[in-house]
Amino acid sequence: MGVVERHQTESFVEDLNELGIVVSGEQIQQFLDYYEMLIEWNQRMNLTAIVEYEEVLKKHFVDSLSLVKVFHVKPGDKVSVIDVGTGAGFPGLALKIVFPEWKVTLLDSLNKRIQFLDAVIEKLGLTGVETIHGRAEDYAKPNLLREKYDLCVSRAVANLSTLSEYCLPFVKKGGCFISYKSEKVLEEMKDGEAAIKALGGKIEERVEFALPNSDIHRNLIRIQKVKPTPNKFPRKAGLPGKEPLKA
Image 1 (cartoon, rainbow, N blue to C red):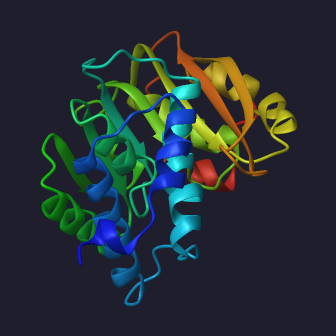
Image 2 (tube, rainbow, N blue to C red):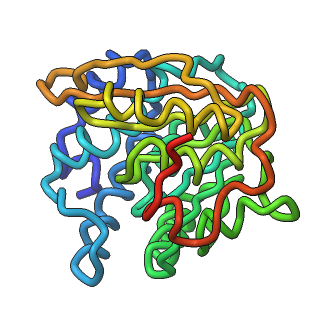
């Protein structure tokens, strides 16, 4: 019996359709293989606290793909994306499965997670996706990945000011950084506004919504890159988290 037969996928497909996403049978199989590897590897290392099948599909996969609410692309559009603090590959690897033409970089500071992601990428037969073991503060330097991407995404848990300092340096002028947040983000946005401006960004849009067929409330904040980030940012390792920019 194959993975598809072992798992019900109707609700997942319905959720994606509600987001305007249509997936093939091959893509569904890739998500199911991804799920099974996540659970298998999670027994050996801490990848996720969410392990129940329906919850992983909703709270990891569908949540990752909700990006389409604030980032509008046409089929076939080639987009360069970096996922900062990708963890178990959310949202970057989920986005790669649905948008195979995107060029995706998955950045994480823990090598064990990178090994997991490499194994998933090989199993799923994905191309045009790279993994990097390292810190955002190091790879955002001018001779590395600075201002190379159309889009930066992050579901990492940090305040918006700290995340913006990690993420905006990777974004080209005219591109954007999209932060995935839960509820109560208005104060965070207000507190981070001056820092985002100092980093060359501007808050363009906030979309609040519930994940399809659920009462799980989410926010997506799209920050446009309007000018280059000054070379002094990001500050040295650890500082963005310990001392978030105030202005």
